Length: 147
Image (cartoon, rainbow, N blue to C red; front, top):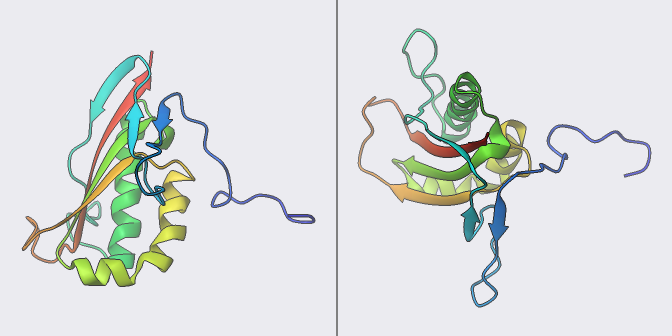
């Protein structure tokens, strides 16, 4: 856009991995059909909820909890020497699939705030409960950090 600098939300993310789009499948929106990882160190991230530094779950909505959980994913990845563009897979576990579905429009900017416009292979799972009873969402990622 003219007259406006690109924000973090608008930035295109360059990844060392090859994102694959299968032409016989529906166009992927907000995820990749497949990701071929570049050579590097594989980082398996532990599941991240909206847990704050004190161990308490932050936020009461899917949106609030996604924002915290995504920040936790990025923090764990950074601690392992990686960054969001190194993610090759992200599993999303939610206790309320309809609530997640209805929040998609608002989730997009929160996703881009933490991960930019890099969309790894992503799957959504509806679960009855997460370890922390107050948790509504948990993110589990795998990254490959180039050597």
